[in-house]
Length: 512
Image 1 (cartoon, rainbow, N blue to C red):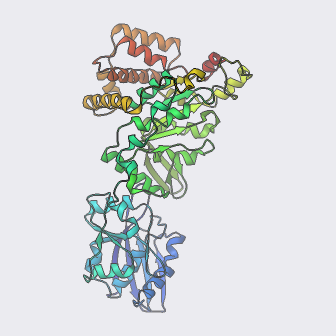
Image 2: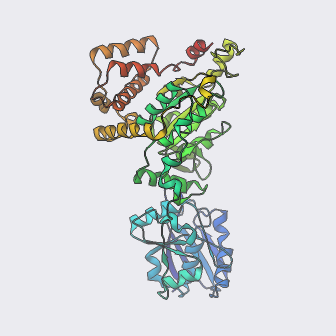
């Protein structure tokens, strides 16, 4: 038979669109042509495929071979199409069962010796193959990742000859199996840094607990060495383990990123801490083809932005829309990709360029204009989307003594956080930070006197409507931490108190 069809998958963001690998053998001078918008790595596969087939002691047809990767308008890149192209050529030559080839999907890069090398973005392809009801054959190094898609029938192979034997029924490939979770993945909270290591900072510890309980965004403002980074690193230890659905969504993003993926840690919540020199593209995603950025790699996890005042303003402003919607759409010439970005933001910054504005030591020599210019690097709309603004002071020497009393450990705080989250999920099916307008009207009702208090705060502090809604969500979380059915005046007053840095100019004036 001179015509054969193999199935494979391309990579487009976190999706894996189907690709039909059509192979035709025709009389004429020996040649191998690949069409269908292939990238350079795909065009080079003709040499890898020829050498792999010949080194596997199989006959490479001395005919005019045309390989079409359909659909033709979908860009294809990488070496993932080597294996389906090779199988299509062998099937068209009569060396592989064409019917068996049509029932499977193939992914894999070929070495010149015929060995299979791993490829990226396997998990999205495995999920798509399971939805189509086809089996998947892929390199052995990708088996643990593909096995995370529980409904897929995935087989692993080490060489081209093993795949040929499986399709011809002369041997059976091994099924892909998941990697056993490592110790850190079995109990992420036990291996996370302990909150008891943080000395003093009772107000900041309280804010961290509230942020963990309601998935609220958090901004820590204080002088150098006061424990901002120390607190941020302890937030994952207060969070519950990711559900299977959440972990799978995050694993798909990690698989599509091309940065490497550890199947043994797939249930752990991600903690991403990019450097402040990162660009807007590195933060939100981009490139050609589009790849997920840090906010998507932190999906269902924590994104920590240290030295917030040193970030490029364009990079920070790119966070506005994802903070609200939980997704980011990256548009490039001829390519669009949508990445999930439901992350919890924790940011830290100094109060001024030197870092000591408002400190009791009076060592700050920054002028009011310098402080205001420093704070203006953060736009008002971005600050508006951060629920908790926490001022932190320098740690007192007595708090650093070995005999000084230590605060609650992570396990104690985590117990309260889990209980508060269970109340939210039982009531609304989602956490308080994700409540919509109608859900807030039902779950965040205020007494008439408390409503007047909130309106006065809105007028006095020049709060936006978005900030007011976030205050109500934080107040609901405070009530959930105390297992209260209704929001009280104390809950509302505390939530209002966390909105100190909505206006950079006012914050700088108070700090100076």
